[in-house]
Length: 489
Image 1 (cartoon, rainbow, N blue to C red):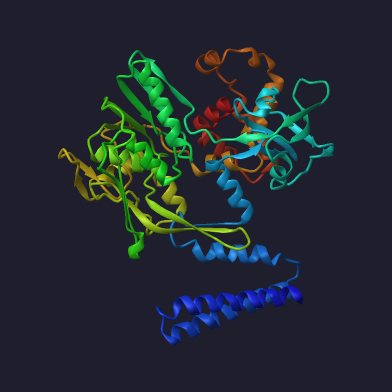
Image 2: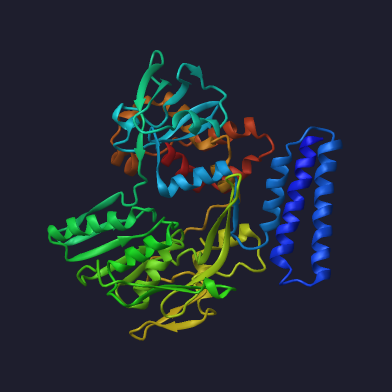
């Protein structure tokens, strides 16, 4: 009863907020109707909690209701619980921990990747290792959300983990000193040949601007004459970092991007500053279907100012600005408040109306469809007079089109299934074929062929857990599945 009374109070407070905020925008009848709807919501919630056949978590119900409220707004407005927001922030802000990514596979914490130079890497931990104890307590069956709570902590503190590895006679214990883990933006900065530099930006985190400055300075000191900037696979990040990156190549005073929304405050212009611009060497920017948001801001500005050539595939087309609205319980609403426009006035955002979210995302990877749509998009001119297109991502100046069809829904579902079928099958495959571990990586990639029976074995492996799947599905998607199996192995 006490819990329900708290919910009633919360809903009453919601009404007060909406009334105060909305009374200037809505008439009395609209405000009254809104109040009635909130009363109904409150009544439904309390009825479920009181009489539903099984006990339910009212907090989860409210979280789901919020997600239902925003799901038809646009593909990128998102509600995150406090725990989800912490995990999301780590992607761009860094954290203090042991420097691994993990998944729960067969009830065990399985290391998926180890950050080079991090505390786990220094002790020799490897992808595939399983953490079975943390500080002397069993970690078998641990919930995913509880793992960071045990492994993360202040820099300099320690955590003891017991690890099992395929090939070891028994598990080993490691004492790991936690450290600040900065999310690396630039994993590669090198020369492909004398004078031709290559820099890959994996994400736009809070350190990207400084990382790029360091990379460019180092390459210039070694005779940089031309540069390839690789934004493939970069789904975006901080707007300010996109501006800083573009500013390295675009002279001061020129616009990089502007935003425009429903309210006047959403209109903002971002210009290159005179500081930080590097020499005007020839520049190529590589993009693909997964280059999005901040990547598209950089590519769009470079293309509009004719500063370099954009090469690859049409970018994703994610040009919506999300503003963070935090709440008292630590949850956050990332709500679209504006749209990104390139200096020539092109809208970056791809059309998402009259289609399911699934179709919206799958469409991004369809080369032939994207090229067909191009002719229907609004035309703009770069500052040198070249024709470019708006409202559909950034189309490259030079196309490197893939002839491959995008993976089917069946294959995508297999990839993201919580059972991690590709990973666990690859483990069993390596256990039965240990000689593969001795192969050179390049030799394996170029010359090794999976045995003919591998596809059937994989199908049987999956169907033991999901018998409702037909074997024909595996034959229909054989090429993609073989590729994914070999890559995982």
